[in-house]
Structure formats: C-alpha cells, structure tokens
Length: 162
Image (cartoon, rainbow, N blue to C red; front, side, top):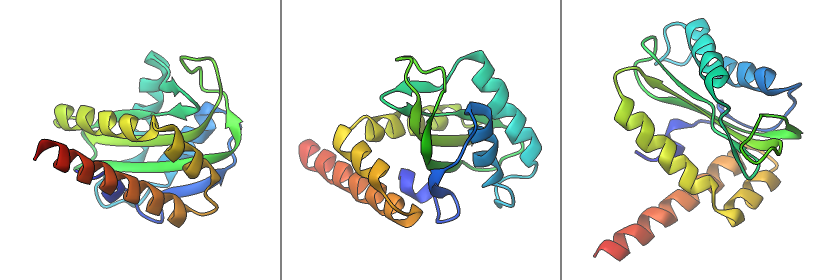
C-alpha cells in the first residue's frame, strides 16, 4: 500500500496551529470526521489519545507518528501535517516536533498497521525529504512531495530486486 494513497487534500495540512500535543492530535482526528471508513470519530479520538498516554509517539528528528487501532474504522485512514510552531511531544530525543503523521487502522489489521507505520518511518527518516516537507507551502505540495518520494523509493527497490 502506498502511503500517499491514504491521504487527500482534506487530510494534508501545512502550518497547523496547535497549543500542544493533545490539541494537535484532536485537530488531526477532527480532519477525519466524515471519512467514509470511520463510523465513530469520538471513539477514534479516544483511542489515539489513550495510545499516546501509554508511550509518546514522538520518534525524534522533529517527527511524531500518533496512531491507534479501532473497531469503528473499516479501513486505514491518515492525516499528515506540518506545524506552524514546533509542538512539545515528549519525543525520544526530547525535541519538539513539526511533522506529524496520524495513522488510524482497523483493530483486526495489526500486521498491515505495523507495515504502514514502518513505511512512514522509512520515508520521514530521510533528511532531504523532511526538509522539503517542512518547507512546503500547501497541503497539495506536501502530498505531491510525499508521492514522488514514495514512487522513487518503490522504483529503486524494484531495480535492486531485479
């Protein structure tokens, strides 16, 4: 599954203004309100916030990957934002984040959820891509950069296995 296919112009935002981690998460989950795969947005919101209480999803390098699984979602949904100001997220490297990728999956799809998180992590760990994403001036530009890099990675992997 391509990560960019989980996103749309409604779920990719630049310069999100957030007063903290919880506010950022709530705003991001709210972007999924009305998503056809989600039957109960409040349950999803609670699942993400509860997951975050267990352990911060701030993974370092200015990146956070909040995520959760819920039985109220029929297929994977995602939101990608850059923040106007860095947000304190309790990250592993103790630095605030400016790039947040929210992933919500179905409770039954644990292995798919882990594969998608891994792919997101590989993409966002690339310094050059991260710099470009943070410099994006629109959600559409952010989405296009992610799509191009993901297709480049896929093409490179295919050539290496041939």
